[in-house]
Length: 412
Image (cartoon, rainbow, N blue to C red):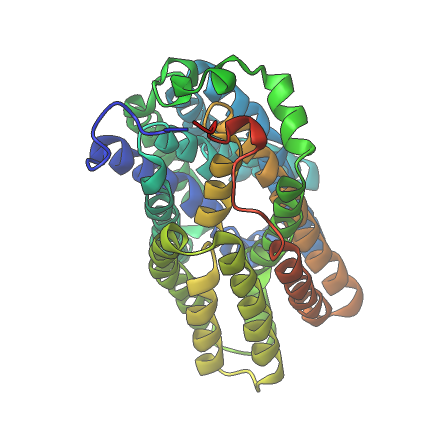
C-alpha cells in the first residue's frame, strides 16, 4: 500500500511539523517538572508525599484514559480542535492547582484536569496529524522531531520552573505556567483537518471503509500490538517514577538541590539528542530490536546508578545517559502502530498503546509515594523498575514489523 501524501514525498510540511513540535514542547514541558513542586507544596499545605504521588498518579491515569478518546475525536473532527481544548484544560487545571488546600482539590486539578489536558495535547494526537502529511519513509524522522520537541520542553521548563518557584513561590509559578498554556489554541490551527479527508488515509479502500470498532477488534487480536502495549507499560512505569520523585530522591541523598535541577535539565537536553537519533535509527533499522536494546540499557544504567556511591557527579552522569534513552521509545513505538494498521485510526490505536503506558505511569508514581511513606526509601521501586526493563526487552524481541494481512500488497 502507498501511504505517501499527495505532495512530493521529498518535501516535508514544515509548517505542520514546526507548530506541532511547538505544541508538544508546551504541553509536555510543565507536566514533566511536577516533581519540583512536591516539596514546597507538601510543606505549605500539610499534605503528604503519598498524597502528592497519588495526585501525579491520577494525572498519568487521566492522561492515559483520555488519550484514546481524544485520539478518536481527533481522527473524526481534526487534531486542531482537540489541541485547542488541551490548552484550555491545561490553563484551568494549573490555575486551580495553585489554590490547592486539600488532597481532593489536588487530585482534581493537578490530577484529573492536567492529566486530561496532557492527553488532549499528547504525542499521539500530534503524531497522527504528522503521519497523514508525510510519507511512510519519513514518519520515523517526523516522530523523532516531535519527540525531541517534548524533550526540549523538559529541558526548557525544568530550570524555568525552579527559577519561578525560587522567585515567586510555587503558587504563582503555576499561575504563570497556566497563562503560557493559552498559547496552545493559537498554535493548533495548522493541524486542523480530518483523517477521512486525507488522501494518504484514503489511498487504501479497505483502510478507509473500516469502522472504528473493526479497527479496535483487529488491533487487539494482533499479537505484536499486544506485545507493544506490554512493553510500553514498562516505559511508563520508569519515566513517570523518575519524573515525579527524582528531585525528592536527590534531596533525601543529601545532595545539593541544584543537582536535581541540573539532572532533570540534562535528561531533557540529552533526550533531544536521543529522540532525534531514535527517529533516524528507527528509519533505517529494526524497530523491535532497537526497543529491546533501549530497555536493556535503561536497566543497566539504573543498576549502576544505585550501586554507585551517590554524588552530584553520579546524578549528572545518570541523567545524561538516561536522557539519551528517555523518550527514545516513542518514535519507534508510534511508527510500529502506523506500520501495523495504517493512519486512518492512528490517533485512537496509538492512544490505546499510550493508555497502557500511563497505567504503568500510575503504578510507578503511586508506588513510589506509598513505599516511601512506609519504608522511608525509594530504593525498592528503583530496583523493580530495572527488573521490569529486562522483561520489556524480552517482550519486544518477537514483535513483527509489518502490516496486518488486510494491508499487505496484493500479488500481481
